[in-house]
Length: 162
Image 1 (tube, helix red, strand yellow):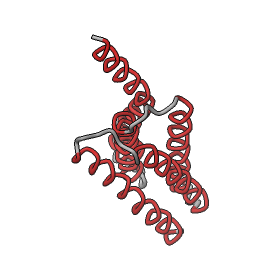
Image 2 (cartoon, one colour):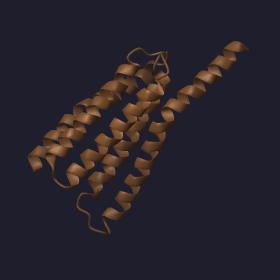
Image 3 (tube, one colour):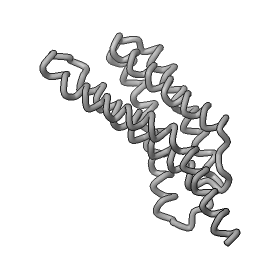
Image 4 (cartoon, one colour):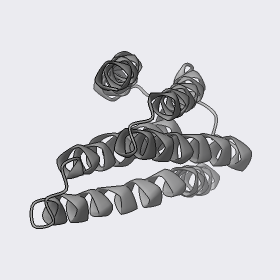
């Protein structure tokens, strides 16, 4: 009985640590849908890019890495760790979007580097995993790799287009 209570408490704590990422990511996906819906009617040239970035990076990427960290890491991440990571992720994403919209590659670079710091922190926490599920761990590593490769490419493109 004591083991069951410990497992339930552990699961609740892990959900609590993943919740900020889940909430912020869900809001981002919703905003991305709104951006996609309005970009055509108002002829917003960058609307489809903003929608894709909100959904894929700020939304799905954040949910995948944040929830993955919460459930794959050996130790439950602290509130401070989660707060720092979630804040870096969302501020970095905001900087990338604003920098892209106003065509400021320096701001895109700062935002992209901030996102890379957040990815590194999230990946480091999951380095020692408690998961016996290889496919979950590999999926997490794949998402980290995708973000580590695509972020510098996005930064370079922002400089090329300016």
